[in-house]
Structure formats: C-alpha cells, structure tokens
Amino acid sequence: MSRESRTTAGIPSLLVGDPAYSENALRQDLWRAGHAHAGSLLILSLVTLRYVDDANLPETLEKVVRHSIPATAILLPAAFFLSVLFSPDATEPNALINLAYIGAISLGVGLFILGVGLIRGNLIQRER
Image (cartoon, helix red, strand yellow):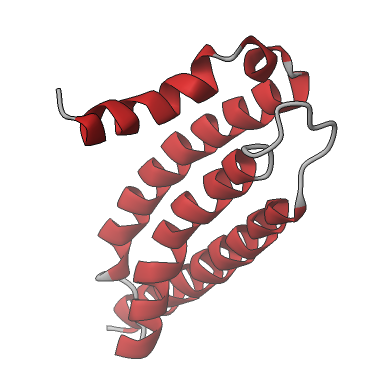
C-alpha cells in the first residue's frame, strides 16, 4: 500500500480509534445525528426530485428545488460532523453548527416551492 493510501486510511482510523474521541458524549450524539440525517435527507431528495417535473414551476424555480433539497443532505450532516471534529474534548459544538440552520432554510425553501408548484399543477389539471 502506498504512503498516500496509508495516510488517507489513517485519518479516519485516528478519529475512530482514539478512545477520547469515542468517549465524548456530545461527539457521539452529533455523529449519530449526522449519519441519521444524511440517510433520511438523501432519500427525501431522491423522492422530491421525482416530483419536480410534475410541478407547475418556472424553470428557474425548478432549478432551485433540484438543488436546494439535495444541498440539505450535505449541509445538515456536515454541520453535525464538523462542529465537533477538531476537538476531542468538546463540550459544545463550534460555529460550524450554524451550517445546520442554512441547511434547514434550504430544505424549507425547496419544499415550499415544490409544494406550491405541485398544488398549482394539480389546480391546472382540475380545470381541464
């Protein structure tokens, strides 16, 4: 195995193999939350992408929906992971936890626009 590969493999093992790292309750909770949010938001993103084409939205707003909801699947978990990544004895998250607010706003905007577009599409079909 090359030095670069060993170094890359060693970085996660340093995080996981360090007893102080796994004994920190805050870190355990935020990493658990990060993994749970990543999975559920990824599924939500895939489901909502299916409905974008059915929504009655201008192309610009379709792009907003197509990008804002999947971006949430990155922003929220990143907030949880990065907010305790650098300090093994952290008792509270650092400022990177604010990415969660940006992710939540991104999710809210995307879902709201998609919902309005789906309602508009449904109303137009009823009129026909």
